[in-house]
Length: 367
Ligand code: ADP
Ligand code: MG
Image (cartoon, rainbow, N blue to C red):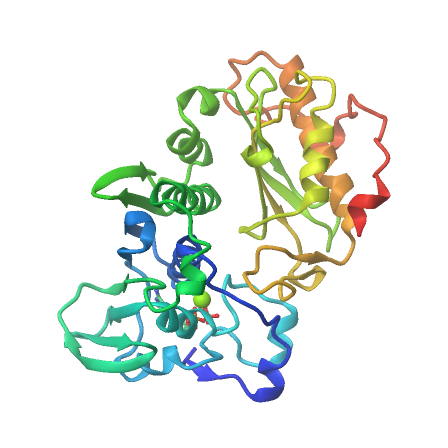
């Protein structure tokens, strides 16, 4: 689809607010663009917590030379053909706000080449304005570089923490997307050192091993619960055996249609599924992707797209909790040597659940 500027009545429907709060927000937006472009390799580099340099290179679809400048217009996107698309979003991006916001926050350079073209094109912007453009030798894909982030925005700079802590945030973003897209090979370099590398072989367990270590991956129970009926949600991912646990809740990674989201109620659903299995004050490790029909989810509610609204949150809560409980109870009765828990056995939905009681959902979590 070509890039176009959304009409004012379309743009008006978009959740407004600050997209770029810190270096990790830039990384998140750029990586989402690479994933939307169908990349199978994404290399990310940051220096000094991202303030000195952020570079994201991908082997995705690329941008046509004639569209390079247009990509920096506000509300310019190739992902929304018609207003109705905003109610059934299937891409990570959809608002056309990231590139202009990033260009307003730092010096940027974009080099891109579409696979069928002989050469690529490049554009450089200072203070949001194009100051250089031309052709650029490049391999197919896109390289986006940001320098001197927030250098002309002291107000924003004030909220940036130490380079170490910003780098940790960047690592968290890459780790979470690497686990949502195990078929994509991610490499993250922080201040010249490789901080994370995933094989990109399609195995979630291997991606989990790269992010959390081999011990966690060895204790990971695979979940692949298909939708119980048409229009219902499915759950895919891993829940780690309760013998391994963490001091913080940050190891429960939740995704909706492969978008990393924050959702207190759903995090609680996962914790509830582990109830009685973990020491007090400890939290589980899990990576869970909810596959929900796009028209059941509104991702257009938060400026950074970190939160989503679910049409039927109670049903999602219950289905998620069931899927995790079933995985945990199955793994407790099946010898750990079984490589894939569901091979050969009856379909999971045919097995009686071992936990029949449903923990009631606290109403405070369903606001
Ligand atoms: P959005 O992702 O919401 O469409 P962005 O401002 O992030 O908006 O990007 C604008 C457009 O630039 C995208 O719609 C896409 O067409 C193009 N684009 C950005 N990054 C890439 C990339 N890495 N590969 C291919 N196209 C890209
Ligand atoms: Mg985008």
